[in-house]
Image 1 (cartoon, one colour):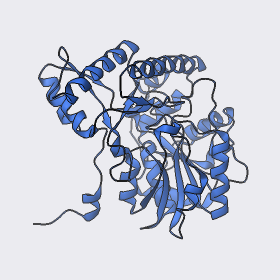
Image 2 (cartoon, helix red, strand yellow):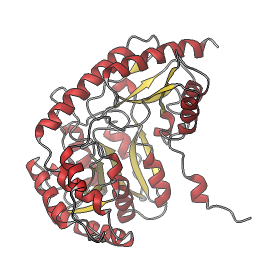
Image 3 (tube, one colour):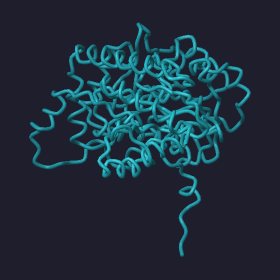
Length: 397
């Protein structure tokens, strides 16, 4: 019998999606499942984006340019400049989600067995993208005790080898919600210049910052033009996860010329989704103001409720809409499955994402879960109530 590839065997399961079959079974039992496991906002997509698709006058659904619509890239450049980022149209290639942008970035900068340093915990699919690209993830651990702040630069430097090609960060962070300060970004900038590395920044949550804190982009750093690669997406900004539109951005012309070859190989990003994404740029600032206010309220509600549970430790996020919670259990994978398979409180249960899948270091984060606060406040309060009762039952079974 033919065998699947070693690469395929090594591809990790998604800690976010692997429990879906158990959630489906729970729902078939008639249980209500509160989804704290996935960053799918319940915020409405801007009407201007949806109307653009509804009203599109298209007789032939053609390929777009491999780099994406020029009109979209031009407006996107204007959007970035209005937000203080010196990005030209030629610095942008539209991709099928931020996921493809990350694959293009890895494919354009790294060869098989090259190394990429990533502070962990990190977005779980970085493990998958690295495996698919034949790249080795070298983790540098951040901890819940520091709120998942950037580890000391010396921790990064001692991991650099001749195989190291890049450092990858997510800012604000998924799954931690940590927002890197300007000082932390500048430290990384000096390090990659010193060792001639790329600094890849996944900035898809840049709009989601709280408490007056500001996002500082790698594209803002003078002298980093040849090193900086930014990953972006419309998924979270406009609550358009299903559009699957992102982009890779860099002022390094060799990187972008290489990324274009990958873009040409997959032909083009989807047309209707680009129409929606281009129209979304007309979304008024009031939309974002309301969204940020709502997420801040949700964050404050969730953290306050989690802090009421004995034995739970949680780092308060500064951005995005996730947090990592350390629970008084030994195995979050087992607990998360048990919640769906064997537990309910008056016909309701919760679905969380075990955090071990957000690390590449074995046996780290086993007692942690990622929680996405993408539900309304009443649902978050009820979810934590269920979680509290579930922990008591689980630890006494």
